[in-house]
Amino acid sequence: MSIRTLVLVLGDQLDLHASAFDGFDTSRDAVWMAEVTEESTHVWSSKQRIVFFLAAMRHFAQDLRENGRQVYYRYLDDPLNKGTFTTELKADLLSLRPERVKVTAPGDWRVLQLLKAVVQESGLTLEVSEDRHFLNTVREFAGHAKARKSLRLEYFYRELRQRHGILMQKEPNQSKPIEGRWNFDEDNRQTFGVKGPGMLPERAIFLPDAITSEVITLVEKRFSTHPGSLASFAWPVSRVQALEALRRFIDERLSLFGPYEDAMWPSEPWLYHSHLSAALNLKLLGAREVIQAAEEAYQAGRVSLQSAEGFIRQILGWREYVRGIYWTQMPQYLDRNALVATFNLPSFYWTGETEIACLRDVITQTLEFGYAHHIQRLMVTGLFALLFGVDPRQTHEWYLAVYVDAVEWVELPNTLGMSQYGDGGLMASKPYVATGKYIQRMGGPCATCRFDPAQRIGDNACPYTTLYWDFLMRHEALLSKNIRMSMQLKNLARLSKDERSAISDQAAKLRQLII
Ligand SMILES: Cc1cc2nc3c(=O)[nH]c(=O)nc-3n(C[C@H](O)[C@H](O)[C@H](O)COP(=O)(O)OP(=O)(O)OC[C@H]3O[C@@H](n4cnc5c(N)ncnc54)[C@H](O)[C@@H]3O)c2cc1C
Ligand code: SF4
Image (cartoon, rainbow, N blue to C red):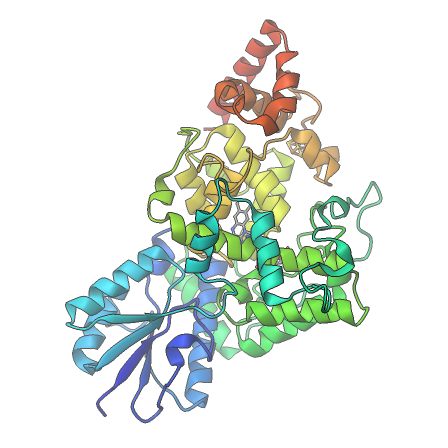
């Protein structure tokens, strides 16, 4: 059969209703998907991440076939598979000779350039359609950004709430938020106190079926030296499983999501978070349906507004916002390094072998599950890299490699911008810096750590606390231009000359020990 339209489906586009399928005719059109080694090696992807993507792709291909769609699928272990999108797509365009090639807008800038080039080489033009998964288009974001001197999440988020009528009052007050409040951030910073979180809901577990087990065997063999382990692999890898994960979150966790969204507790990775980012990013779940499920739970009186709003803000606010930043700033964004940070990422990020207890906990958990919640990423692994002075490009590559939800459009602005201040304040109004006392207050494992979060110099000094003061000293001139840093710089000004030089010496020794 000659093919009219070949629809390219990437590993993070697993949605039967994606825009590239509009007008799909099963008698004349076909789907193309490929597993390529390059996507697991351009950063040193963890085994959990590789299995998650491949297993989800294979389940989706099965769904497509059950839907009567013809699928040309390149398996990773096919001896003819040369391992890159370029080689595989080029070969298939030559043999299939479609009249048109379509794709839903890819999430990654790199992938879009690559696909465009291959299709053009074959004499066709790649037709790229809007990704309807998102509630805001890149053009709309650019319009929002253009009208402003500086970008901040809050106004963008309010605009989207109004435009989509989410958690808004009824007519005639439809431009006002429900209960008159846009934001419950202040109330959403509770900790578990000394007693800890008590009984937590069980993680939703999806045991590997035959397809996933086959992928696990393949990845163990093919990527044996890659970081992490697969013993606990239990992510939802199909639409049906993703819907079940959403239901479990709404029923079991959402009610306490808000109050404890910033809290941590040793050896408790899951807490009241949704663990839905990976399913969302691969489009097994729609952003709208997830937001709607949370809003309905509030309307039905099952969860507080504080929790529903806190959760919706992450998806309607942050997720859409970082996508806008990514697509309006790429490709220059990748190279930004406003703090001129040049140290290498400490090697323990790939093993978890360090005596710094909070880092050991979060990295070990990350390698085991491919997951850490936001505060662990921002205020444990991210904070350490920022204070240490790691080159943001290396930090970015680590985050892109180790998390099952890692795709560049969402990972890069969060890492380089929000966490590392590499964009000089485009994403975050100030660097997120703190001493070890912050980690202690939020529930970190300081009680069992050999360091003391209150000490900045001496044998027991907490590395975070030493490096925090060292960070303020190293960047004092730049930070003094930022009004939001004035309190922290005022405290710095209280230190004597001797204290300053003792901190610098301790930080230098620490760097030598760690590298
Ligand atoms: C350094 C760093 C790197 C990150 N890398 C990624 C990444 O590669 N992929 C990714 O999806 N998220 C990333 N995040 C954002 C956030 O940490 C994760 O989305 C969240 O931890 C996923 O867990 P969850 O599904 O349990 O989230 P929940 O806490 O349950 O939040 C609900 C949902 O909101 C969305 N969300 C929450 N915070 C953010 C945010 N800051 N930006 C965008 N979406 C958000 C996610 O889709 C998430 O599933 C990163 C954050 C930091 C600080
Ligand atoms: S004392 Fe410092 S290094 Fe140890 S767990 Fe607490 S914050 Fe982390």
